[in-house]
Length: 298
Ligand SMILES: [Zn+2]
Image 1: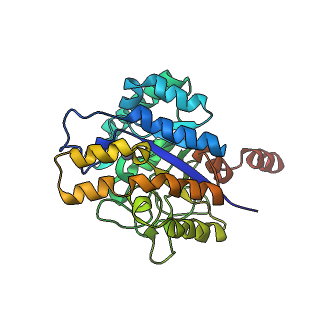
Image 2: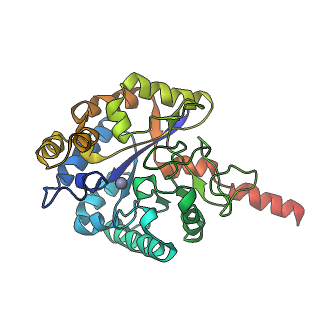
Image 3: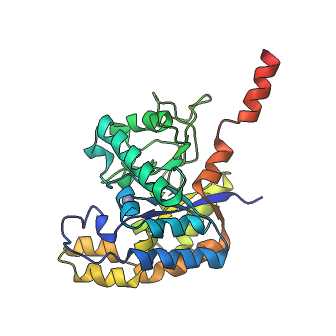
């Protein structure tokens, strides 16, 4: 039986990326076209995905976000302002959650049950966020990158789904909390190369991405992969090249945009994908089992 993987898209403006956010002024967003490219591809492959939407963007483009939900996809939270958790404290994070949930509810009629931190900023410094998400009623989080990179990551965190306890956000324990964590896919248990998406997916050949997913699936673990809709839009590659940014920023932001569509289609051909909420459900504490155990004991 094949493992169902998590397909996700972080919906934000192309210039929200950390490397660009101070360098680009008054840009064209390209967001409508970028999302349309992704929705067309998903419809062609008849696959559902999760779109982690920035709350401010849902406020600016409610009909675009409604269109994502109407196409059968899950809309989840990517924070309200796209500020990473390193720049927030508990109080401002609670505000980010509340504002983004309201913006998504207003656009789609449904409150989000999942969260992904901007820049995967749930790390050992900000592990307090896990307990807050559980307390706020979120069913899953997908922010932990189980690898240490210069910008983010938690070395030693589990590479497959687990239920973190609030006092041990990066440990898979027998009795975890109610929240399911869906860590981003890494390739090779020891090297832990990030293959999950974004810049890495644009950089690495699709054979290596496929091998990363297959390696996790062979261990019975789903791979959680992510892309940004703007990464499929050639107009964004041109916009990045026109922006007043350095060679490094240009490379990380625009490299491989023209080939990513083919890579995504190759993955959709080879692997099974679904929404994060539906994969998280498989790892949730089983309410039916809890009820029957309670009956036997009591
Ligand atoms: Zn983001």
